Amino acid sequence: MTTKTKRKCMICDERPATVGFYCHNCKSHIDAEIRKAHTRAKAPDRFITYQGKVVEMYNLGDGQGKYQYSKRDPVKLPKAKTVDLNIYLPDFTRDEIKRLKRIVLSICERVENPHVQYMKEAA
Image 1 (cartoon, rainbow, N blue to C red):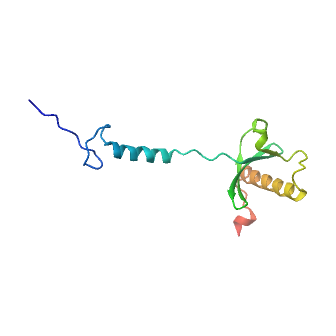
Image 2 (cartoon, helix red, strand yellow; image 1 turned 180 degrees about the vertical axis):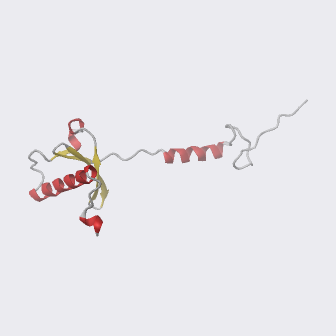
Image 3 (cartoon, rainbow, N blue to C red; image 1 turned 45 degrees about the vertical axis):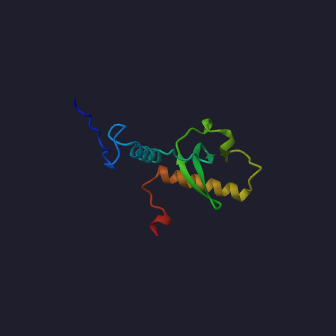
């Protein structure tokens, strides 16, 4: 009569391998690392549209924001998160509207003309 030999875990080499080549403890650590690596990207807080161009706004806290160019269709954006600068917005002051328009146009300009060197980058 032969006795069945138990395989040891390939990582820790202490506990018996029950899940493939790994013990339950090591397998749970591997699964946790895989879940961390596949975290979802954060959804934008707002979409700013102007002249058919879309910029995504991410709130970083401390009153600061990060702006990113988007190729999404302005018509298909969620209305609750969209700030359309083409129409009158009573909630914003004139200076805020000007600042947002400058942001949208400068980001889109950099994406559409990447070969142009800008003043801030040249310094």
